[in-house]
Each structure stands twice: as structure tokens, then as C-alpha cells.
Amino acid sequence: MADGSLQPILARTPVRIEASRLLRTLRPLRRWTLRGGPAVADAIQAAFGVAAPRTACRSAVNEDGSRAALWLGPDEWLLLAEDDGAQPGDPEAALRQVLAALPHSLVDVSHRQVALEVSGSDSALLLNSGGCPLDLDPEAFPVGMCTRTVLAKAEIILWRTQPGTFHVEVWRSFAAYVSAWLAEATRGLTE
Amino acid sequence: MLLINCPWCGERPEPEFVHGGQAHVARPTDPSATDAQQWAEFLYLRDNTRGVYAERWRHSHGCGRFFNALRDTTTDHFIATYKAGEPRPAPEAAR
Figure (cartoon, each protein chain N blue to C red):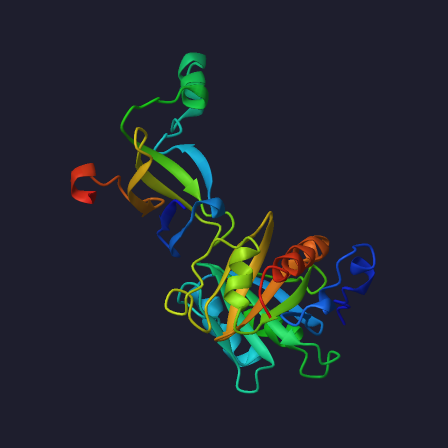
């Protein structure tokens, strides 16, 4: 559904993120911004496979890893789903059904963002030297933690999926800037 | 880097936040009965405190919430932060 390819954007920038062993773009995802109260957070379990986490800055992932709900605020979550070509189990229709009786907002933002992945033993160092001011020590930012934050002058959503792997959601129009900035930062890291 | 304790997210770096002006400025409950002078004071007049000051902050590059903070304007030290709607804590108790 969503074409999250960075190629058209990166064609206009001299830095190619494919040049780095630490950075790669992720496959297109389907994304929704969900807003509502605690009842909304629990209700989506039936339709989406995971309940929206109620703990600050934490994520929930289903068993096969194809769907995730990320806490962004006390009444705001980002829902991510693998792009399965809108099969009969299309999560949006099911979500709208279970949420129909609850006050909520569900907006498809699949095309708004692209996903990058920063991985490797130096990934936290790279993000920090690339302009992210958060403490990314595993004690302060454990696996499963997610948050909106800043990277240099762009806003990103940072999600630690594995000890050395970060999922970075960035708005499409900032993707060239963020990827170029990170690619530049990798040049300071020793191989 | 200056760390600000967001009541929702915990201690976070200052670039994620936006300052929102003086806190606890109450809107007149009956605007139609408020004269121009009172209305202008509500809209434009703010304290310029030297010392402990209650102000609004927004975790704009985080959870997006407004909250209130007690900050010492002479040292830039954040004495306490608390959720919007909660009463202002006594500075001594918050230390």
C-alpha cells in the first residue's frame, strides 16, 4: 500500500545511506496514529493482535513480529503493521469496528513516514554522535522503549527493537536530511 | 545538557521541550463582565520574577503534553515539575 521507498528522495542527495553498514531502509509499513482514552488502548487487542501499551515510552509487539503498538503520549499511540497488501484481515477495518462505540481518532499515516534501521555495536554511539540527545545506555533506554525525540534538527520516533538495533521513524520530507546526517556521522566511527 | 523531568516520560534533554510562559494564569470566568483593563492584564501582563517561578512547558518532541514546572530564574534550576491541573507545590517541599 504505502510506497516508503527512499530512492526518489535520495536521488537528490549526494549521500547514499546504502553506503553504510550501519544504516538501511526498512520495507514499507502501514501506520496509524491512534488517539483516545485507556478503553481505546485495551479495545484494539481484539482487532489488532496487541493492546496499546499503557506504560510510558513502551511498545507491544505481536507474536510473529508483524504488528506493533508504540506509546507516544498518554493518549496517543503509533500502530505499525507489515504491509500485507490489505488482506481480508485488514487491520484498519477491524480496528474501526471495535472502536466504533468509543471516542477516538484513527488516522492512516502510512505515507507520512519512512522507516530506517540503525544496527550494529556502534548504533547507540552513531545516533548520539548524529545529533540525538537521549541517554541510549541499555539501562536508560532498554529494548522495547520507544519515544518521539529529535535527531539534529528533525523530529524522529526512536524505538529500540534489539540491544544493538534501533528502528527510526522519520517524516518523508526529513528522510534525506536525517539519512545524510547519519551517513556523515558514520564516517567518524572506526571500522 | 539540561535535563527536564517530564511528569509523563521522566528526565529528558532540554531540546525536546518548548517553554510555554507563566503558569496558573486564570482566564476570567465571566469575560463579558470583564473590563478592558482586566482583560488586557489577563492577556498581556506577566510576572517577571527573580527566583522561583511557575511556568508552563511542553514536551513537544516527546509525549506532546503541557505540564508545569517550578524553576529558579537566577540559577535555571528546575525545582519541581508537575502535571497540568495539579496544584503548585511549595518550593521548600519540592526541594
